[in-house]
Length: 236
Image 1 (cartoon, rainbow, N blue to C red):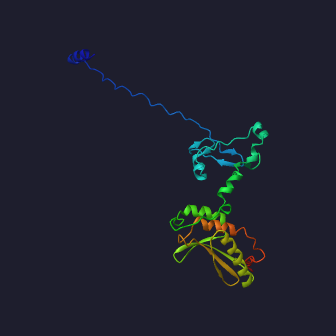
Image 2 (tube, rainbow, N blue to C red; image 1 turned 45 degrees about the vertical axis):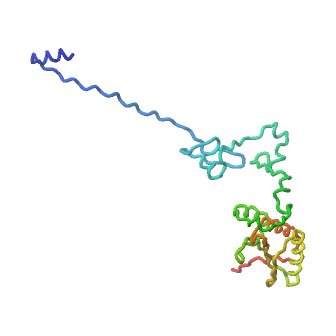
């Protein structure tokens, strides 16, 4: 005690220094082994999974980000009852592959441009300025290109013909389709072919009407007047 220590010191006795208390030994971290499979089988594909990645469900976060899946896809094999029910009649693929739902047939009547009709324009509608929407429409008329002419956009397609007479016949057939939609086409006979341009003069540019007309023109059978461009041949 402090009292005893004072007395002993006053009596001249030697007192051994008190050792400082030892700090408790630090505990060694326990190694935890986490087994991460190198591959996870998915129907129709295999996804590589690496240690250190953020694993979500059956797919790593990195793989989902790259693929644009936007969350756990939750793939699983069909149950015997589902297979027996014929559920895959509404999907694309086989029983042992990845499935994609078919677009209902009725949707085509609404979404396909060829099934729509041009509407009357009075100039107040404005041009089709949404670039993303134009690309969606253009996918249905892939042979038509968007070009800038005299300060406004047009849809352009070129047809190759054997001679000028065939080119004029192509123009006549295209004009017949355009008249049915109360529209006109700009046509130019150039060399062995014809250049067609479609645009809406009422809005001074492109309108959905132009894509609709292009889709209807694509339905024409011009095989007796149009020739295919010969392939490039390289002699080595």
